[in-house]
Image 1 (cartoon, rainbow, N blue to C red):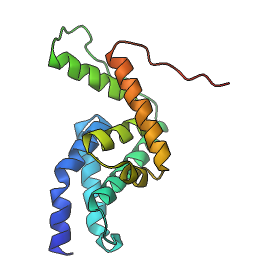
Image 2 (tube, helix red, strand yellow; image 1 turned 120 degrees about the horizontal axis):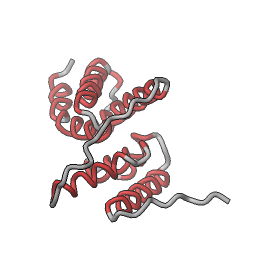
Image 3 (cartoon, helix red, strand yellow; image 1 turned 90 degrees about the vertical axis):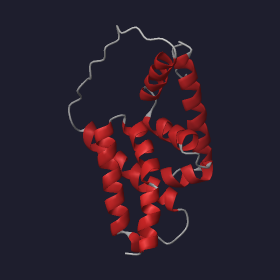
Image 4 (cartoon, rainbow, N blue to C red; image 1 turned 30 degrees about the vertical axis):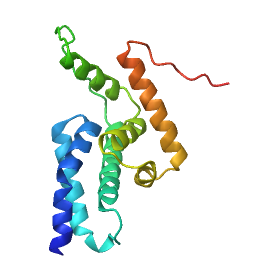
Length: 163
């Protein structure tokens, strides 16, 4: 294993953790996703053919999270209880509003929003990571932004009419 490759992967750990925590919304699950991503990346160094290491690592993490969500979908759902009676003001309340808005996004929309806004990736990179056309990334991002805006402004997110 080359030391340059290992060092490059190590420098990506904070960004991977940030993305995984925002995606999974649970720090323990996020840490597991990052660890699994690192293990796969280091074991698969021969498969990395150069290019954007960051996009490659995000792709691995995204696929691991997809697999995790698929296996969870086969299990009975458990609901977490939240204390909604707490009185908050200022940035704490705004942070909670943003977290609530992100939590209600569809998984694909949340992932696109996080990769573009939080991680600063280009639409092309996100399209490659998600395995979708660039137009799909753009529409998911537009829907995600509209949904977050509606939730923060206290509106009920509109459902699209299908004719």
